[in-house]
Length: 242
Ligand SMILES: [Zn+2]
Image (cartoon, rainbow, N blue to C red; front, side, top):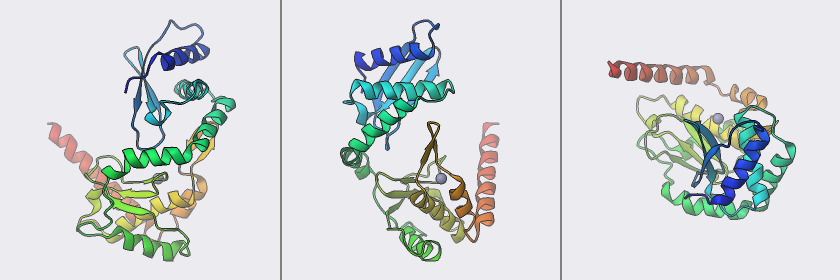
C-alpha cells in the first residue's frame, strides 16, 4: 500500500530536523503488513525507503511524526526524544485491542496452529518445561511449527498472538530432544520476561532473561549442537558457491 503525500510531508519535515544542512531527501513510504507492530527505514542509493506498519495507515499526524523521529534518530544513532516515544507507545496502548484484532485477521489465519510435528509435539514439551521450570505458572499459548524450514530464525514468540513458532527444520529425528526443549524454553522466557525499552531501544534479551536461560539443564549442550549445525550449513552453502 503506497502512503500518500501526508506521510511524505511529515517525514521530510522530521528529516530536516535531524539533518538541517542536507539537501532535500527522496523518501518513499509504504504501509506494510508486518506480523507485529513494526516500522523500518533504509537508505538505498540515495533513497530513504520507509515501511510503516499497516496498522498505522490511519494514525494521526502527530503519531506519524513520532514514528519518523524514532526511525531517523535510530538511523543516525542519536537518542530518541522521550516525547516521541511516549506519544508512540500511548497510541499503541490506546489501540491495543483493535490492533490485536486486525493482526489476527491479517496474519493469524495464514499460520495453521499445529503443535504436533512429524516427530515432536510442542504442547507436550511446553507442559513438561512449565512443570519443571515455571512452577507451572505460564498459561499455555498457541504453539506451532513454522510452515517452511525458515533460514534464519530458530523460533519466535509473537506476544500479540500469544503464539510460539518453532522452525520446522528441528522437527527431525536427527535433532536431539533437548535441543527442541531448549528452543521452546527460550521462547517461554520471552513470555516471562517482556521486552523493555531503554533509551528508545527495545531490549529483548535482558540480563534476568539470560540468567534464567542458563538454568536450562542442557543449556551448554543445546547451544553447542545448534552452533555446530549452523556451522555445517554455512560450510555447505559456501561449498555450493564453487
Ligand atoms: Zn529470543
